Length: 361
Ligand code: NAI
Ligand code: MG
Image (cartoon, rainbow, N blue to C red; front, side, top):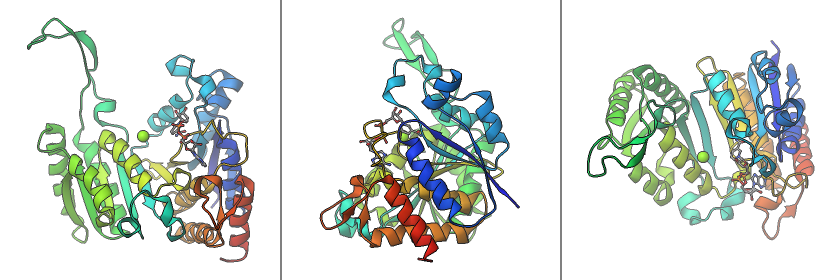
């Protein structure tokens, strides 16, 4: 069976890092087939739109999308619907990518990169699963109006609606329990059930679904406490599942525990395991075109693609071991460089991962 991948490098550092991820995939001798298409700023330049129909068509023919990054500063003055970031929102919507996976792993070689004490973060390996298509970001009604009542009746006000339907919570619950089952068998559902009806509903459904996963231990935590625990004792967590807004914030917080945005992959999946795989960072316009960006987050995103969409955990392991091996060799891009290590550029880092794979490391 051919593994069909839509390759969307985007703009900024996107092309540089995706080139390296493709080289790594090619080193695995898998039956891969690529479709290439522009997205974000690159698509705006070519087609006047950040997510043109021709790019969607390439994605529809594939089983997974390898995405670089979008959002160069030079597009900041465009109207909102033409801005590069709209492409990522459009892809999530088009493909129903409701489950966002963000692992936060601290590699022992990068222990000093974290701003937390080594004993707090050493060996950190947690997975945050964020619901991506519901919650207050999409709930209707929303807007601006004249305040209808209360102390400030008649004054201008703005409002959004937090909402989740039962099927939306059920499907993210199943994804999260399934992922926890494959890892440490512990799942923490993060909510605000003490204040918000939406999250009491969320919590009730998590408890209900947990009956189908007796081997996974479920606990619940309020989001404010979760924010504290993530910096106080992050290793207490295994898998965290939460809504769209809390997940947005907590996943960035968790990313920073490892201190190196250039190392963090992500996956956004739908119900049929079609996925969009991308580094957690953005297009880094400050270093674009300089050949210094860290390609490892994108390379590790390709590993997640093999694990989650293509069901090739063996190939994913090969990439992940090769990444560990280049770190152990002391190779570092500028973002993770420290005294006593060897500074390399984007292409050298990618080539080192390829060599490690070929050497069976
Ligand atoms: P950013 O993640 O692009 O950059 C933040 C800092 O981290 C910069 O100093 C950058 O040089 C550095 N950095 C990021 N990735 C790196 C890598 N692989 N290697 C070495 N250093 C790296 O975030 P920022 O600056 O807030 O946003 C820049 C643009 O990216 C904005 O237009 C934003 O909207 C967009 N963005 C796009 C995302 C996506 O494509 N999914 C996600 C986040 C932001
Ligand atoms: Mg965010």
